[in-house]
Image (tube, rainbow, N blue to C red; front, side, top):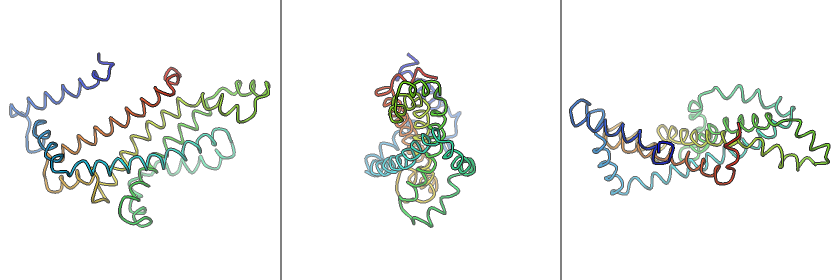
Length: 251
């Protein structure tokens, strides 16, 4: 049961029940940790007021755009780096230098370049999701057994055939691992950007409720963010299992 989809909710339910019981018994300070039932009422109120769903839609759009902006070029570049030593020599040092930089620290620069609004947040999400996708794609290609490639060449296979029949199938497990990491980081970058530089979106709502000290509403929006992260990870995993299920058995 614990390995099923319903089983994964059990630990969360146990924590919420203990939280609720501790709050009702006075063991938990409601000023900082309102009971889950109060957070649920706050969430229902936000939905009823019509404020929550439009902001969730805005954030979801930014996550998707940032994810595509980062993952698509990163995957193509990673494959190219894995197959070309010269591209790897030129690009790998740049990635090594820029990867450790806290991405949120460049948000002021993005605001200068792109102005206020959703565009710098999308770019931030794209940048933060770029690195795991490119590194995993390159690693996956480099891990493909060169002996298989040599055998295919000896049998007369062309470069395109080798790419589509040997390299990409062998690299897909690593590529999908990078995509799953990138999806979560796209959410992280979007929420961080909305905290600091947006007047709309679920991240902006959370930040605003913290500023005016509406803690129950803050927890309600945090729960929505957590649910979005869980949904995003689940969707990417389901896509992998649906179309490339055989990759899960590879190491």
